[in-house]
Length: 455
Ligand code: ADP
Ligand code: MG
Image 1 (tube, rainbow, N blue to C red):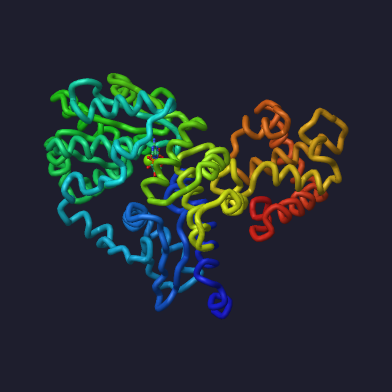
Image 2 (image 1 turned 30 degrees about the horizontal axis):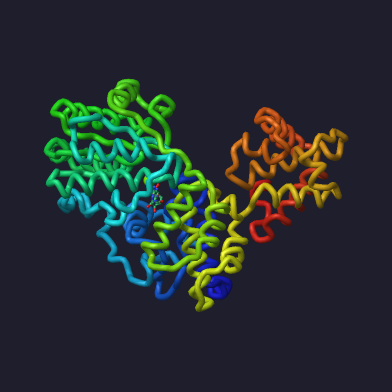
């Protein structure tokens, strides 16, 4: 008990997050958990700070019991979680079983009012997707049906689909905007409650169906079946369907063929990662909307540093502004450098702060080699071993793809990385020396986390 009392709410939450990270999918974790904080713990109530109402609603509805489970051992068996948005307590929804009994909310209550076309910056990366979205929003059911939008995390799919919903709702279309996950939950509940008829009627009666993150549905046979019928009923009567996904229909794993072919009936558009100009334009727009005066050189710096996705870009801008506010001054280049130095700059797309460079340096140090030797062409025994360990550790410690790891280590190909990881994985089982070496390096990279992944 006493060790619990000595931990701050943030420390408790950090440990719980470590636990949650392995229980939910990576994109899910990144989206919903990465910006949360442990605020307080008192009288069995654990308060978690979240960035917006959306996150609060999502976590409340979908992750509450998982979160409470992960906190039980760290706090008390009776712990209850409360979410707080910008300092305000989020009104908890009734327990899951109760929600099934309450009537569904009006169709467009879940649309995020910030996600409109006006605030969606256009660039080469999303021009086609935006134009297609605008045209289905203005003339639903008449141009492309379905409209299928795909792209990586944090590139604006949800923003765009909500923008469509809002525009159509403003034109008095009866819109349902939901995620594939929510659709599934709702369907499962309707089966349990034996009111699948209500479920079908609800979806049959609408003018436009927006489904976010359809990849979630793959492999859930009954839900796929139900979605298939919903899709057909709506499509046959020219009602607009818009779907987003993290990949195109043809590479969606576990998706039934008949659904895949339907997704390909209409128009498929992608959203690519933003280029520098677009990142800068987005930052300018976000700063203006925040009403903060950020000098151009600062925005340029952020645009250069945060490269992969727009969510990370926004996060960097917020961080810089928060730093400046703390120091009671306007954002300067110096503040921006300071604010972004410990989130790994260019690597902000990974949830972790461990970067390949850090790992390569730690490995090089440990072998008393230079960093250049590791990324270079030397093939002596020590260098080759160190290089393999670096590949293995980057694979373990970050979300970098095999290709990216190969690149970080002197443009080697993915197959070389795979072989290295396999070899190290086998070797550590028979070589205590190697195992200890890895432990040491890992401790060096993340002193707190220790070496759980090797245990
Ligand atoms: P996804 O659903 O693809 O993971 P989101 O739609 O949630 O991504 O976008 C992540 C964040 O980036 C949101 O805050 C969104 O408003 C912002 N965003 C994405 N694309 C744009 C854009 N083109 N212009 C302005 N903001 C954008
Ligand atoms: Mg999304």
